[in-house]
Amino acid sequence: MPKPDKGGVELMRFNGKVAVITAAASGICRAVAGIIVKEGGLVVGIDTDEARLEKMSMDLSKESAGAIVTYCIDALDPKAADRTLKNIIPNNERIDILINGVGGSTIIPNPSARVDELTLEEWQAIINFNLSSMFIFTNSVIPIMKKQGKGKVVNLASIAGRGFSDVSSSAYAAAKGGVIAFTKKTARELGQFNITVNAIAPNTTLTERIQPRWQQQSPEDQLQQTEKIPLGRVAEPIDQAKVICFLASEDADYVTGQTIDVSGGLV
Image (cartoon, rainbow, N blue to C red; front, top):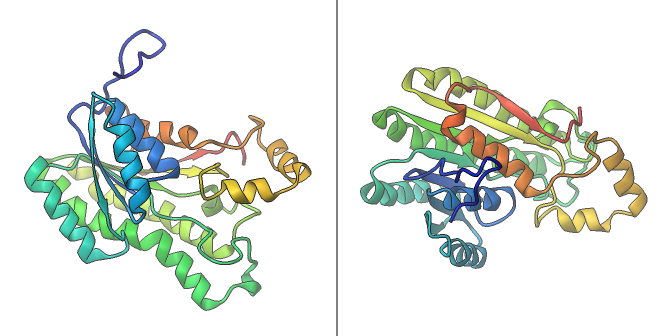
């Protein structure tokens, strides 16, 4: 059962809601899926990692409040995305929430490469990985949300998209800046349909993908980074997930077009 909040009231913000989450099997979006299922929602988890999807499904199916179904597909494949959404609708008749979670900087050999160290192929790979699935799923889900008269979209950007990151490439900064602009523009387009579009901009977050890189750094380098953060620590996936779930809930009904920095005060 959902845990009571500090006032002793059980949080059930997602009771009966259907949430499609890409990159759902690990990291920030895995934490999001856990919250939504615990609060009564049906999570449709999409990822390319079948083993992690199965583990997530087993873990979250123990939560009696909500439910989870998973699809092992490439979110960058528009035909696979379309087939998946067509499978969802006959069974559930609606999609209330879309979390666009695919993205990252570590798909190239040197995620911190300077502009003169990047190849065109690496630049294009980063741009495609961080923006294309966001477009594919938003493009496919919005007609459904328009038909039902409301919906919520939450995108994953990064503080790199504001030019704040010293440890990521210009390609990643450009891609995440694109996410921020995409969020603002689509929010303006879709507000008249009662569809909100928002994003979060995380700083370094200790996901499964980032943990190994973090652990390879010396204690001195780790301390240097954490000292820049007013809250004095790097983020955990749950820190980001809580803000995403706020934006995906009715608590944020009058919030749209915003990108919230979830960075421990780092600016």
